[in-house]
Image (cartoon, rainbow, N blue to C red; front, top):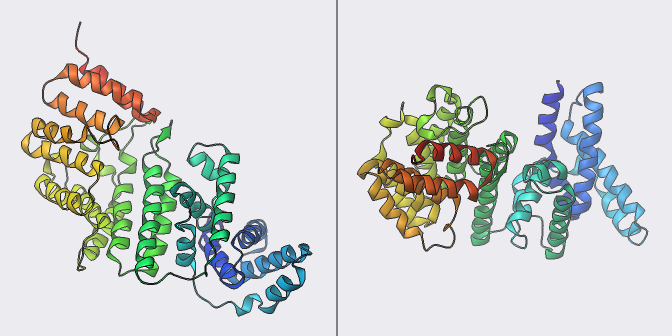
Length: 405
């Protein structure tokens, strides 16, 4: 097995091993440390000695021994914890995948969204604190402290290692999906830094979404989120030039879109829409599928996209949804109609002054024949974003419409 394949296997097995240990021992932080040590041992030994016949059992055995050693080192609890840890060997762990339960635990309501995201990437994704810190452009010590606090909060919150029931389960699943959505979005369009996207982070979000979908294939929103990620990620190669400059959707070379991902995503959209209810991820996936279905930007079925945004705006009102509907409306009824809809967002504190609103207004002003207004808003938008790639793009658009003195 190649080093890359071994790494992929370890990433897949890590949350399963951690989930099995937490289910048995109930000590999240200690189990997470023991699992990490087992994974590190495998990363060293497997490439040289070969992958064992039962890799999951191997990791469980090593992690269990590490956990017992940790417990025994704590003299105050040695007898009680050693007995409990020694009662069940790795072979007694039931052969079930607790990844979904682990995701629910990492998205505990006692945690902030930032902590939920960090802990999910650490415990389920297997990323190190340094890798997560680099992805979100914060110091490693800051991210390590955030993850540590998240573990302590979960420990203090208590509760059993099991899927919540009824309404609580549904609410927690929505949080899980939102965290994965945030991880993907940060990977697809980085909020800051020199690169437009962080492909590794987007791929990790897709991998985790596949895990959830494998365990909940009948959930429309789970299916919709995975479809949305695949259809969006399919455009990644066409989103930048060789120099790393941003290429907007209507100017992308669609032959560079990943047709395999588009086909898979489209089939998932069809499956998600077959259910009795519609959720925001299903609708966003349907919009992405409509774009993917068009051979050129001009052939996009804009009335269908607008109709989907109207439904999305009704069931999940959000300023970003209205912003995107304004873009779509401008394609149907002209830029002035889009600008008129944008004016409704000027008093919304959630988006007023946001670079996305400024850039869309600039684009519509440009199409409406107002270069001076477009220039001013492109310049303001460039100053409002922390993404260097987006700054370069917006500055270039401003230069293109700059009025001659």
